[in-house]
Image (cartoon, rainbow, N blue to C red):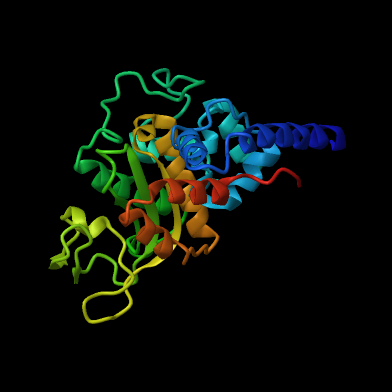
Length: 279
């Protein structure tokens, strides 16, 4: 067992060294490092040790999982006593990972019509329904599950193919709230059937507290076109919620994002999500 553990740690150190070499000190190097993370770390193979530590890092760990096959990733999650990918696939896509339509390596579902990562407004609504189903399946009362919202900042999804995602705890649940809308700056009342309801706000117009950010990730928007990535996002989101995680650093990151400093935020997300290289 000790030999296998050390082998896993050694693999992690080598992979981490390769990743570290992607980052430089100049602006151009920073953009390259950000792009490497955003498109997913395709050649980054995770050991069981790294999957365990990655779960603790939260949804920022998501891009590191891209290069790991469905079966291997699921085995690592099971070893870590995390939500199985099979549960997530059923909650998100209505099929289990053993279904003959599911590719055991890529996790893609044959014949599945793509919703996520295709600039379809209904995607955020469906994602939240899937997250709620998975939370309830894991034993959370539905009333409590409605207090957790998967939010997305799409400001640069079209122009830069970058998205900022956050899981928030919203004590008011599905009640309407009135805020200064981020995209327009206009005082607006948002309801659950409106896209703006699925953006995080720290306070409402009356300066009352609204959202607590559980976890967040900045990433390549088109990565969400991969079924395995979406299912893994749901798993990591539930694990962050279960652990009671809070991420107050999100608000500073979002301010930088809104100002156009997306590469800085991508690099911060990369650092947050990097799995530990030792046990």
